[in-house]
Image (cartoon, rainbow over all chains, first blue to last red; front, side):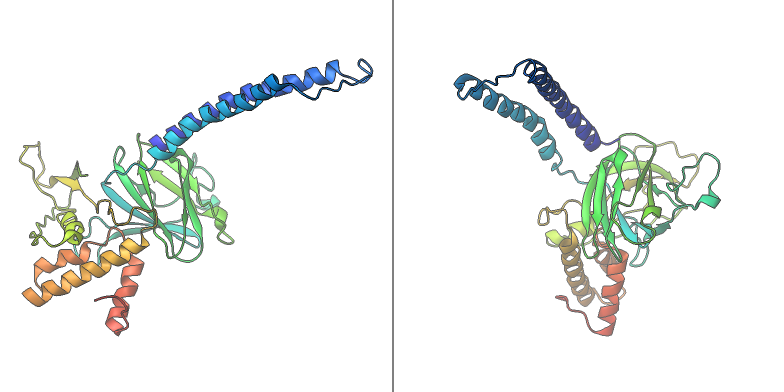
Length: 211
Length: 132
């Protein structure tokens, strides 16, 4: 749902293509070798020591494949560094064991800031159709098709704010304000979970983004 | 970057007075002005109810001094810069002047409320370790 995740998926497809070629070729070579040079069928092993042409071929070809993999990989890596001024800043603060979100762009005075806590809905309180261990009481609501700046930090121990559909994962470290850009391309509801062990209820502090 | 969003508001409409242009560090303060303010636009939108207004979404832009992912230093620096501007403004214009308020909002987008409250407490106790 974000250009970042789209880029990651595309890179994955590129790499898997080469991977399949290599795996098929290698398995085929191994099968052939085992079949044709079985000790019963071929009792005297051959001793081949040199073969300049083939050695060059099997050095150059993998290098070429690596270059072909590196090109889209670096393209994605550098495109992630692109800087766009965001329109909204949201702070996600990890606590034991819930997330709290602050929307401070709208402060009229020194003390106002839209802040709320986001606790997981326990199994007993789930309604029909809701997902277990993933639903929260207050969702993080954001505008779609808007450049967002997410500032992730923690109030006590390490946490990690991860939403796979958005291609977002960022460690929440106390004393650090980690900034990630997010641009959600469609309306929808996106689920994630805390991704850094943070105590007894580490598995029970999900993230829900609604665009 | 700012976008316009049509939103129903509760009718509060505050128009903050613009500040004097300070050094680049007050750029963030200027960007924070008018946040949440309902400004009826000249492009006559169909506002049947008097409470509808267009809201411009604005936040602190990228600060080239802090290009890294960790913005903790930026928060601290912005707070110090904003405090010094605020106190300079108070000295010039006197306490309670509305013009000075936007300075203290410049860092709110970047700094967590918890950090700001802690620093305000340190100030009140006289244990503040910052520049101003």
